[in-house]
Image (cartoon, rainbow, N blue to C red):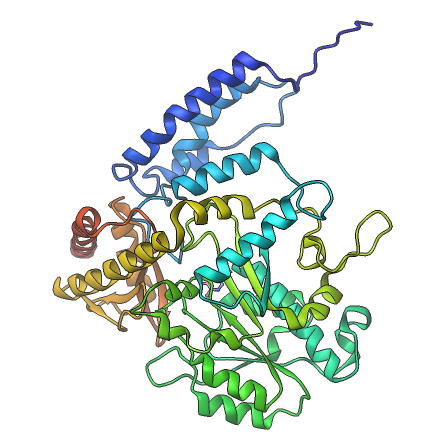
Length: 480
Ligand SMILES: Cc1ncc(COP(=O)(O)O)c(C=O)c1O
């Protein structure tokens, strides 16, 4: 038997240097050429079809050959959604600082679970404080954790709120389970789909989401209707979920008034501000968040408007609720720390990435001003885009632009099928990537602007062109 058996997985300095150099050279080119690429791969279906892998090869190809295969078969099938004209759902695009941070995050590959091995848990705490500063939230009353995104943050928030509700009945739900008490009820007007998902996961059940009417032609909650619903509840404690930025139209609930009702009817106030919390960075928009400092918990995403890479979210929780948070998430075993302040005892995962690292770097690099400019520019883009869309005569606006979302529809496009065809023609131009929705029971289109590269000067004309060409092609096909 050989004494010096070569491992398949090994460190070959010259090879890794060559591969990394080539990667580093690609990065500036990636940024510089991002506007030229179709936003989504034009041959996506063929690429998917070609990606039929046989069984795993017995012997590895080696990093160099595997990387060549990656470049030839995988990378061309990826989307340029990190670029300036990707406007679907609500997405961001990694900034240069966040990219550097993410690379270091991976290189050091920290397990940010408990303290004692590295500065990681402290970095996470400090970064949460910087984020609280960014959003003008008091450091003294909020603590926070990093999550994989707003969905995970909403799940965690509702888990903690559920624990708080149990207290009103003298039950420790973490120990006794949800069956120990009457079903927890959640009140919300236009909750993001992840709220219902959270209720399913948490055993509360989607049926216990009580949808409260909205104001006329709005997605914002009707406060009188909320009060009416809360009055009728027989529960000793309840949960109210406010939306600070709805996906469809970027609408905001009146958080301050909701807080007053939550106090009156003993309800936990969770604010889903996945992207809307960034309104705090804009003098013109920050009043949309009035009263948010009164929330019990707040969800915000990192991979949306903070423009750090996927996946990254944050949850802020009032420090006064620490006991409910730790009761919910503490992971008891002999070989781990039970200390209340350990990251793993405050959120979903035990083993967890040091997501704070790229966020810290981005916040340090760009400061308050960087994000103020980003939000201001994106909101300005959305406003000008809305005017331009209306001026084409081909489309009509369905809601005012409240922050960074434009909701509109093609004139005379009334069925879901027509809307999907139009959407496909628009996206096929490769110039932009947008998504559809349903608004007031009718199909619609939407644009969400959240990317640091999006520019009125460079991208607005191309957006107009894509919408016009998309409509022309739709009608040519219709008439053909
Ligand atoms: C208001 C709101 N909440 C939650 C989510 C879910 O976020 P994620 O997909 O990052 O988990 C989104 C995503 O668009 C959102 O806009």
